[in-house]
Length: 192
Image (cartoon, rainbow, N blue to C red; front, side):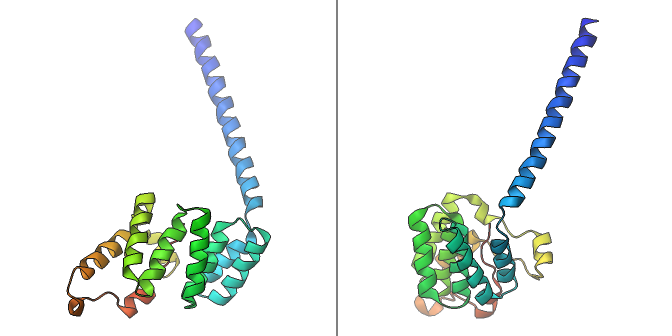
């Protein structure tokens, strides 16, 4: 009899805890959804559609409204990189890294910037720093994301690009192939 009573008590406690957790999850989702900046989300969507000028304007708008939003600043820098305004992009990436030296999107994308403009030693430095910061940068884009973004190839990950650059830089100058314009254009930016 005591064992059956204890079982019922544990069962009731488990159901109550489950209900509390469920209600908390719903509350957290609603609060999080309210906090989401629609302008930032729209800027990201435009960036993915390669509408970099418009995305840049929206990222700047978010930065004016939320000056401490590093993701909006990083979005500006990514947009500027795609618009080939490399000096301004580099300046913004450095500004972000001054505020947070371990901000993974900035670490990774400044490496991509340096890789794009042919400053391979700096690219290697930031690729290494990003990999040391978090191994998640080595995860490839999932097949579902490639499908949704209409990407027909498996983009290389950061570590593969780092290894490739190091291998090429170890060769004689006339034997190096450090970039492939066609493939480099298809390579996606790193996003969290």
